[in-house]
Length: 114
Length: 113
Image (cartoon, rainbow over all chains, first blue to last red; front, side):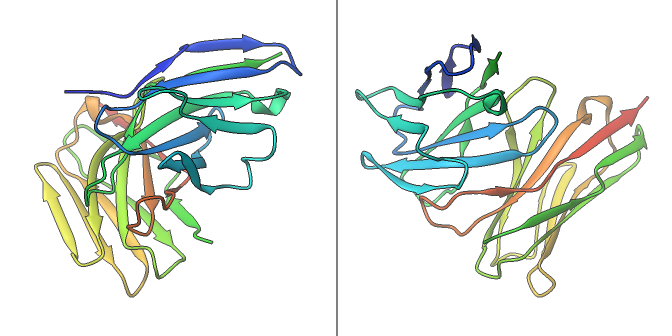
């Protein structure tokens, strides 16, 4: 069964550095999402993406964040200048264009900002 | 915006007993309610979902009930097994393609052998 994949599994960076988290959604999915989960807390929505543009974003998704689908398979989340509080698990998710609203989640990237 | 609350935050049951987790939501426009199971260090996995035109849905040992009037929905796990131990998250959303899920804070379920 196809799955969403994410790289890297763990990223350590210094505060102020830029990071790019990568996701490969399931191939026939057309809607893409990023979520984050601070350790021990709930999963929080960051942004949704469809037809090469952001369809919705949360208040967490400020100017430091951007998303891109640079080619036909990858979906990336960039954090321009990381802060300590950006340390979290970041999950990518995707869904089909059909009537089923469920998302398939990737395994996550653990981002640690020092 | 939508707000989802979830209770209890932790739940311990003996193997074989039933477990019930309850969620409430605030936005009456929400019409899709999934439940996700997250094992330690793993991705959230959908275990069951329900739409607002249905009051109950069952899949083997797992069932979800929805009360639209009261704006709450519950997850029921019967005959619990140690492998049911995980964090369970409920979520609510409108069934639009881009609409984000709002997750509850999670319930840590421990099934004791």
